[in-house]
Length: 232
Image 1 (tube, helix red, strand yellow):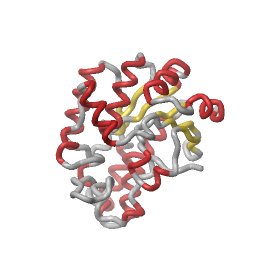
Image 2 (cartoon, rainbow, N blue to C red):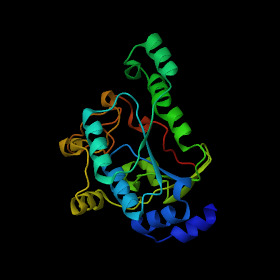
Image 3 (tube, rainbow, N blue to C red):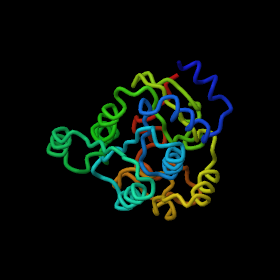
């Protein structure tokens, strides 16, 4: 199926890709949103296509107030269910009890442990049973993501991943938001190009890399949480 999808989706734009997945796979496809600007564009496209693609978000328990704001606005605007997946309480309790609420600052290992508990484990539950996983990844967002493509096989999760906005520029995304008056996180207007958990995200300074604001205390080469890795 992967080969056939690659052949069919080759050369199609984001609107056509979403329409095809919506019609061909429907509820066998799922879209993960963190309510960033790319994800808001895709939510808009999914709604326009008929809203058959399921949607979910990872509620880590450490999100910005502004993220909850755009979450509510998105529900009001599109009236589509967005299932929330929380980390397992026992795992969070054990980690915080042993290491405190801010252990992720102390080492890369601790940060990855926190990411696993709050994001990776819930993600695996969220995509279980689906055939297609739609994401808002764009190629220019990081060097690691330049090695991906519009469609790929995620070996770790045993699922086909589709990135309809892979070749979009930041300007393309912003133009779409403006044209269709799509609700978006106000932090994007305050220098936050990438928004995750509040303790691990800061604004990006002029001239800094796109993801400099994520886990800013770590070496640049380590700045992925494990949700999206190249699986070639």
